[in-house]
Length: 295
Ligand SMILES: Nc1nc2c(ncn2[C@@H]2O[C@H](COP(=O)(O)OP(=O)(O)OP(=O)(O)O)[C@@H](O)[C@H]2O)c(=O)[nH]1
Ligand SMILES: [Mg+2]
Image (tube, rainbow, N blue to C red; front, top):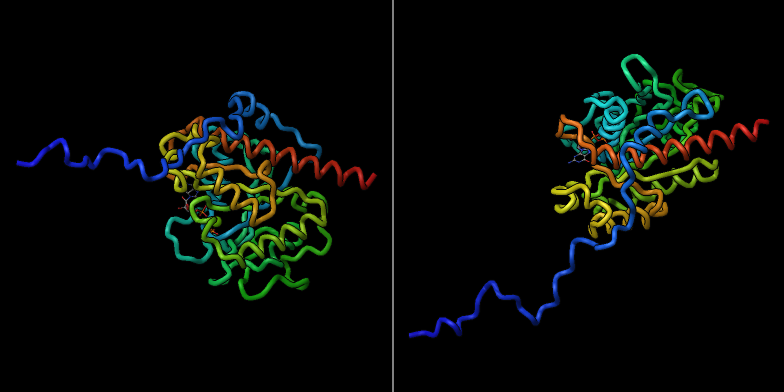
């Protein structure tokens, strides 16, 4: 008869193995803002110019169009579909045209922000050319231009603007990267992003990263979005973005887009608002610097 007590239990911890690393960092590495304050700040934002313009760029399927819809939804306080999203991942960019989205703060009331949605980067499958991203943020490309993955826009194209005004230029460059796959991104994609970024830096245009799909990158955050700034996984993904693109951690904003839910969620809103508030301020600072140069 065997001794039951001497049989090793499968549930008892193996003390010879190192303890698993905790998924949560006890002290949050960033503070969650108060939603009411930040919502008012964003809703009542008055830029130093008629309207601010930002551009979103990044890999195909990163969530650029979804971010535009999420921003519009948070400002309106209801479901909105401004930009078409891609639900069938084909590998090629779903957004093919230059789309300048004019946001609304209420029905028929313009909000002083325009978001430019462009074709995604996809080296192997022929996404947007990096020269076109540069031309787009310099204001040379008009609304509705259809990108050609083979060739960049020429000066002769009817959609090419020779001398864009400050109003037509982009005032903040937003790189959108997906948290769930950023670690597997092709280094050549990062090189393209860096090239775009270098050109923007020479022109003094501020740059940030929106890190989407946090719910797909971290199980803990998927269950409780409130743990975003305590998640080790999210912090690691932000480090990957920072190291590869060269943007400091304080200009990287992890967000979850409204992609499945149709009801408003104050935590989803909070992270989107935090990113939006800073983007608005950075864009406005740039406009003020440019206006001072003209004086
Ligand atoms: N779970 C989850 N899904 C997301 C998130 N953001 C976007 N998605 C989904 O990812 C898919 C691609 O999103 P899009 O917004 O179309 O991506 P895009 O960057 O505009 O893609 P292209 O236009 O093809 O370059 C869609 O099915 C979205 O619903 C997110 O934060 N979490
Ligand atoms: Mg898109």
